[in-house]
Length: 122
Image (cartoon, rainbow, N blue to C red; front, top):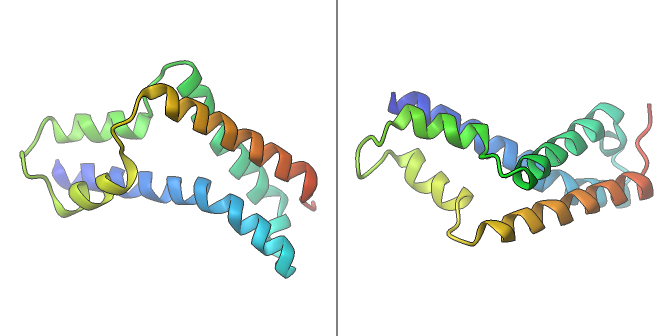
C-alpha cells in the first residue's frame, strides 16, 4: 500500500504546485505576453482549486488527499518511503491550523483579485 500512498502524495504535490505556482505564473505570463495564462479553463480551474482548499479549511475538513494517503499508509513503516520523507517535508508544516486557514483565504482573495485585474479570454 505504500506505493499507492506515494502516488497519492505525488498527486497532492502536483495539486499544490498548480495552486501555488499558478498565481505567479499568471502574473509573470501577463507581463511577458504569454497567451496561455489568459486561458479561461485554466483560470477557472485554478480559482476553483484554491476556493476548494479555502472552503475545506474554513469548514475544518481535512484535505481528502491527506486522508487517503494516511489511510493507505495505515501507520506503515516508521521510516517511510523516499516520497513520504521528501515530499512530505515540502508539503506539511507543524503550525497552528488557523495560520493555514488565513493563508488559504488570503491566497483565494489574491486569486480573485488577479482574475479581475488580468482577465481570462474565452
